[in-house]
Image (cartoon, rainbow, N blue to C red; front, side, top):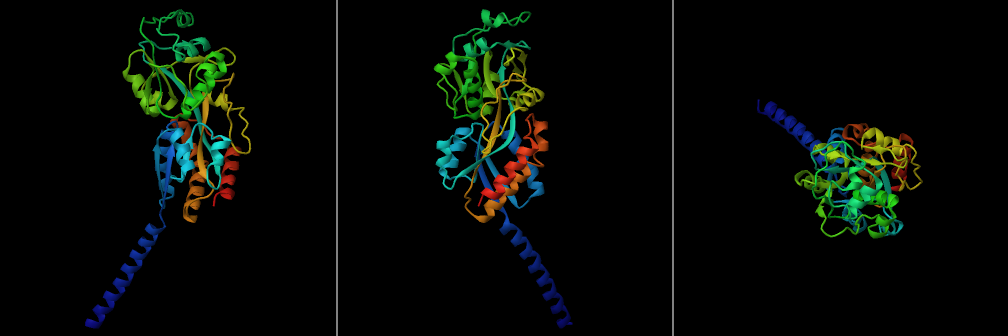
Length: 341
């Protein structure tokens, strides 16, 4: 009897050790990727990470939305496994990444010009939009705004522009557009991740900070990724595109703007402003260092990018982002497969 029970005990112990060993091996093989950067795609990346975890439980991704400027800086410093930015890195910035870096587009989307007024359907001409963000148009019933908004009861309320407090790809997209429609704005402020704004503007950190300030400040107007305007229930202005039409932000209008974009070999497409759809549209990129810290991280990066540019793209539409064309996505996946070590 003792011999028989001992045999059972040793068999159960062997099974337990085997199961424990398998679980330990699974935990040991788990890889954690750390990323930081743009707030523009934050809602999308949070969804990507949740859904990808179901398909690849061995990969954990921690992403901090600190702004595109922070994402670029941390990528250069080598403190993250990947960065994210709505402003494509410059040649100079790319040259500072040890081992090189790949810019991988994941989504596009409109930048909404949102406002806090008890009116809907606001139209802003090129002159009005640039005048507001130059600090020259200061009340909502200014004649330049009124002339394009007949029938709207615009109040004699001070305009309170809200801009970004941090280095921002969303600011880069917005100021590039306004620089294109206004030589005065280009000279005074310029297209930049950190523009030279007039004093007195309110400043919020990230798209969440700007959208929150606009929502709580009567008379405010600010620019933000469109999904933040939707999430906060904010009104978005219709702005003039290259044909002179007033177009409000929408996924359809953003897709029209991106339809003719040509992606070069390095995937840096700068000039997105369009005369076809909504004109303030940008792309967002993952910043992938070619040289990863371990082979396991390199493989996890490849798996993440492949998932985001295939299964993940099906989520873009639901969250108000445009998808990357399938041919471009295939090229980007190949670039990572062959270029990341």
